[in-house]
Image (cartoon, rainbow, N blue to C red):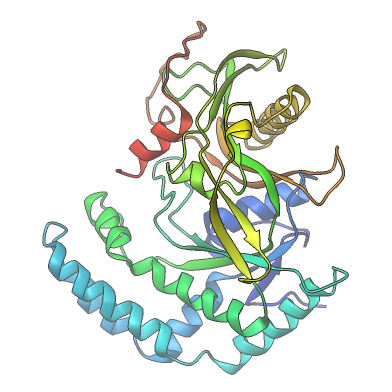
Length: 357
């Protein structure tokens, strides 16, 4: 049976080409096939985006609108961005793409005992690469239910390739718009009791003997976006023991709200704010998973992880994403220090520096 042109499940065997899956989905396919604990899902491939753009008749318009842009003329960029995104979100999807998506969404839901919410995340062909971190440049939508709502947000992800911020980033970094494409990940939502990020290198000094973990209560988006001060842990990469730690305030969390059929932000009670949100065993498990991702890809990694409250201990740590670390990757011939330096700087600060915040 031939594989679909427009859909690729993460657990389908075979190569995971960047040009077909984008950075995020290519990583998720590779990690799933390597046996890593990745939540199930599928990619809407770049072929679907390309077919949509070409058949809708807006490809030439997009190139023309973008060609004359000055990244310093923010008002004009905003105007062009809004025009492109409105066009993408308003055009009908070709029937073949519609049908293949419908079958894939039904097949994903058939894996669960009841309807299960999903996350929809962008996976651009120029994101999550060693020399250009696009973290936060395109959109992510959480806790979505129903085929129609999920399909609508896939198209919103396509449109997010042309947010003002993404356009300016590409212009200022010399990344051409020609040939740029977008895949989209549709993935089982994790009901996270704790989540965060981890780097297999100290982002403050390039020390490769250290794994640095940022962790907070609830979903990890607040950690990645810098809206919460997380617990910051420095872990010895060999012993997997905590060498240094700084407890963050962790004053808010994102959690599911069944009544709202989505997620809500709520305050964390003082008792939980005052304690570390990971046990020693969980710290060791996160660090071990980060090491495994680094070994698989052969370079320092920046991973996103979550601990699912609905799964049993030992099976509840999930890998949501792994991308190359970008702070030190571009420093040619740099020798990583072997001394550990802690300080207050955390992964979150490093991520904010990468994406220009």
